[in-house]
Amino acid sequence: MLARVSSPTPLHRPNQRRIAHLDMDAFFASVELLRYPQLKGLPVVIGGGRRREADVFARLRSALPDREWGPDTLDRIPVDFFPRLADYTGRGVATTATYPARQFGVGSAMGLMKAAKLCPQAILLPVDFDEVRRISRLFKNTIAEIAPVMEDRGVDEVYIDFTEVPGGQREGGRVLARLIQKSIFQATGLTCSIGVAPNKLIAKMASEFKKPNGISVVMPEDVQSLIWPLPCRKINGVGPKADAKLQGHGIHTIGELAARDRGWLIDTFGKSYGAWLHEVSWGRDERPVVTESEPVSMSRETTFERDLHAVRDRVELGAIFTRLCEQVAADLQRKGYMGKTIGVKLRYENFQIVTRDVTIEHFTDDAATLRRQAGLCLKRVDLSRRIRLLGVRVGSLRRADEVTTLGAVPPSTPALTMDQLF
DNA sequence: TCTGGGGTCCTAGGACCC
DNA sequence: TCTGGGGTCCTAGGACCC
Image 1 (spheres, rainbow, N blue to C red):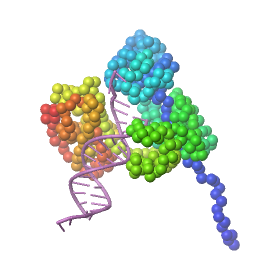
Image 2: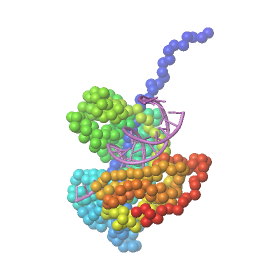
Image 3: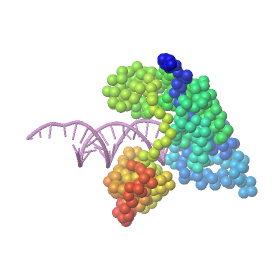
């Protein structure tokens, strides 16, 4: 005999969505401090571009006699041998500053000449990209072993979905965050800050609450008390322009933003951005943690040591242009992509940016083809003005193994000469 | 004291097709 | 003679992020 089925009683409550945002503390600088622990506690700034690498290396190399020099003796280089911000001349910006340097007001993206005014005695080191990438892989692998649903947001940042991870709900995620923080420290010797919240938006803000080496947990019921007092600029997606416009309307905090009528926001900021502002001000964000994504474009660009002129500096500019095309082609080939939209980017001395691009019939990853098409794009911009930056970009990417099944790349025609270009 | 390099996404107009 | 929409692709610029 069959019993009538009663309404099902769930054995488990569904897990609450718990999303973590993690970022490494002063990452580029911390990577250098692993090698040069004698700099701990001192103001250190990372930046200044690749051109300095050899110089800095030679200077540090001279600190120790040959027989004492080695990977294990770098911590014996006297602090006096390290280059100082005061000695820097050039157009670089700071990539990272250690916390002692931040005390002086030095921050990332700040021009180094300005930083030198604030803290001339700070030590200035170039970025070691290979080492940064190595440590980046190391900390991400460490996380992925514990919590596999992880989204890459750059060398020093990730989102992690705690929701279905065993133990991910305990103390709102704090227990798992502690485990990850400890594991990363064991694997790399570096600290990070973590925010755990109901979604990516809040998690990102929460990871900034306690820095360095902090953990912040925001529960759904705490969103308004913790988020509404913050300035709008703290929202990931509100930049300087939007913030200025908000301020112009007397909106300074996220709470003040939330108090505005949705329709008014849409009328003032546009259909898409206005509606989005309304949603985020109420702490709403349903974006998933995305574990895989395909690149949309690849590019290389360079700022010259001095502004160049298309006619007067034709040879130099041509060589740089060719090199950029070769670099993009090499990047495409190495990563296994081809593209069919090829473009150039120029920044004039007044900082105005112009771009030109063209879409060709076939996908390519060939340097000569890029050089030819980008060269045609260059002919469409004003080359009478002095140029500060030149860039080459390839978009509309497809994986190379998919392209080759669609059809072969046509044979390349001869490239234009420098004289034809400039 | 001017402000790097690598990206993503959005908007908006025009061409072109149905 | 005047007047359609929708959809997609292309191009240029701009905001924003790490």
